[in-house]
Image (cartoon, rainbow, N blue to C red; front, side, top):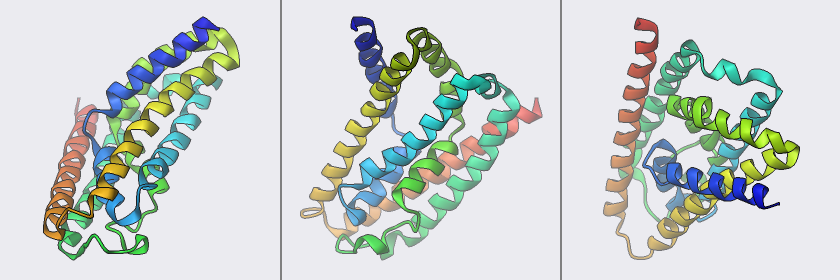
Length: 212
């Protein structure tokens, strides 16, 4: 049991170190939390977790080597870059229309947070690279302890995302009582610009895989 808990704790720490790094998932969570509520973070992580659980199961059943292929990473970079360009462009365009009193059905994105969690994660080629390297190593080690090992690995990993993004959503949502609309609109605009930047960079990275 100590070994299982060791997998859980180290998986949580490694996952948290990745979650703390700014990226598209954090940007989308911040932009949607004030208009959709504190539940945004957990819902985004639910989508993210569904995708990662599917990936873990695929790796366990022998599809892990597919992730390590440059063509797969390149294709994800190009397609994902296009998705982020669209999301970021829409966000930046509509930033000035957003107010902190808007209800959840009129948020900055028409995508439900669960779908946002899936699409934004899938659009990030570095998410694929992480799973093709660190993720595969962790799964290989955890599989030595069977289903429990995999369960403890996945539980620790997804819990780190849930803790961080739930905290972000709570801070943003309850902060709207003292954040002026103009400030929030500026934050949305900056988030949109960042997503466009991520999209351009991911797309360029994807093209480079094929250019070589």
